[in-house]
Length: 295
Image (cartoon, rainbow, N blue to C red):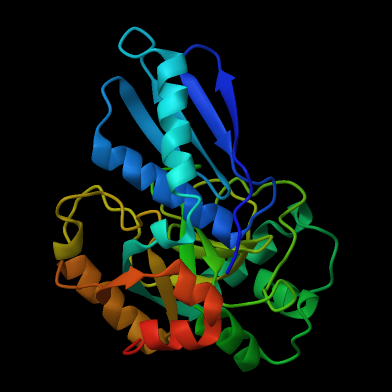
């Protein structure tokens, strides 16, 4: 059995309540943040405008003219206490496959183009730098390590469609980690895959960024045209609580998938599951193996 820390609540001006579950990134804290915010959305409390989960916290924006701040705080505390019970943290989530061309020419080019902004190193590319910092001397074992674990979408933000991915089932020592650029790039290619700290992100648009680039996703995570069947009702692929699985592809398969995306015929590989935090913490590896069957 695992325990959850006590949540600390603060007011942010007249319109915000901030709830901090823990100061460091902990899986159980994120599960609680997701469970609380999911419950809040279900209840549709009058006066609440925005509900935003984060890695180990959440923030609520409300209309003080429509609901009393003190009453809302008491309501939040009630839900927070309920979701402190591990049996209340189960979630209906999607497993989504993301095909990735690792160590591709475009992110190699960007590595060279912005090398002076990165931390001091002698690696030829961001991919090589991340490999070396994590003790890998060969490309394939590194790709296997990064793509073999499923990733939990812990939060969204920064630019539209950006989702933070945290690896599940690993100890802190096993997680691939890397420092970010010393000074951010002024540009990053859309769909580039980056690592910063323990988190992986896929850049939804061409944008500034500071994560180390290790490859290109073959599929969009943000699409205003909504040309793909799975994005007809939303611009964003990610949902907080999703589980993403990276699948390595070569140049030929990458180009084939990109063509399907451009034609509007690509369909994401998605599996709907109920995620049990109790079962996960009882046997992480075994539970994930069962959950990811078929992926």
